Image 1 (cartoon, rainbow, N blue to C red):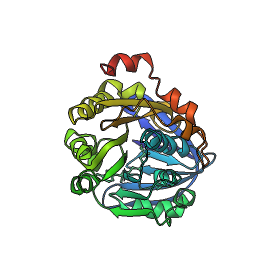
Image 2 (image 1 turned 135 degrees about the horizontal axis):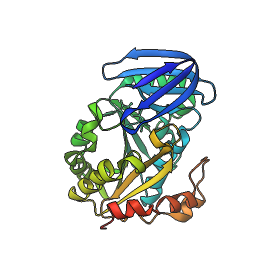
Image 3 (image 1 turned 120 degrees about the vertical axis):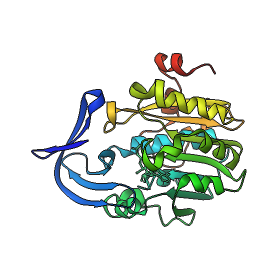
Image 4 (image 1 turned 60 degrees about the vertical axis):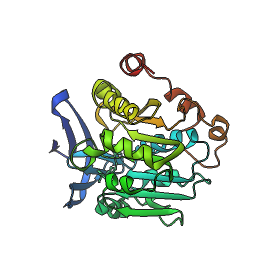
Amino acid sequence: MTALNDGWFTEVFQDQGTAFSLQVKKKLHEEQTEFQKLEIWETETFGNLMVLDGCVMLTTRDNFLYHEMMTHPALFTHKDPKKVVIVGGGDCGTLKEVLKHPGVEEAWQVEIDERVTRLSEQYFPELCESNADPRANFFFGDGIQWIRDAVPGSLDVIIIDSTDPVGPAEGLFALDFYRDCMIALRDGGVIVQQSESPLLHTNTIIKTIHDDMKKAGFDHVRTLPFPQPVYPTGWWSCTMAGKEKPVVYFREEDADQRPFVTRYYNADIHRGALAMPQFMVDALEDE
Ligand code: SAM
């Protein structure tokens, strides 16, 4: 639910009794796409803001936290990622981070709603600056079907950069989907999924992701928390799992000497994010 009062955009989390507000200058765009209501706002201090079905998706100012953590831990956990698929991620921010890795030969962004990408090109051009990279490929359609149709054993990393588990994204948080991911990955492959707020969802969504990924055959599952000021509770997470690959180890030296610029991610941040808070260990770790 959203509200607009005296120049403030507010996302209300009724069930938690909280709300998050950004001071806005003006609405830059609004449309009902085939899949969702899409709004773009200009804020006073966070740059542009994208909202889908009333939920804050990203702002210019802080999206780097999310996009870097959705990408670099998984890519530095894989020993040599060459083919990477992003399911969702229509704003192109994750794609941009993936393409920073010189070893990646082919990256796919599989986004159900082409309008998200077209409006990102217009209002978040800095996230789309690698879209013309010859390694970048775009498919506009359902990611669940795309993964089901993928050649078995053809992918190194699958990044599930989706909306919350409702509507078209619901099936991206499901056992059948993880089974299809398992089939599509090569041995040593890595899957990573945005997994909502540690504070709100550890015993529900995150626990179910762990259980279902394990049922799908992933031996090692780990949730990495990170800050994300514009999402509910300001604290978010991604959950990573490996196909015959422990995800608590990563190429630390490569991460340390990465040949590209990051603003949040580094090897220390990666190591720190692997240390789960005690309440998450208690809820999730029988591993
Ligand atoms: N950072 C955001 C968050 O965690 O709230 C997610 C950003 S990205 C904009 C999420 C994208 O997932 C949306 O553009 C949405 O259209 C897309 N999406 C949802 N379900 C999908 C599906 N089944 N296949 C492909 N893309 C999907």
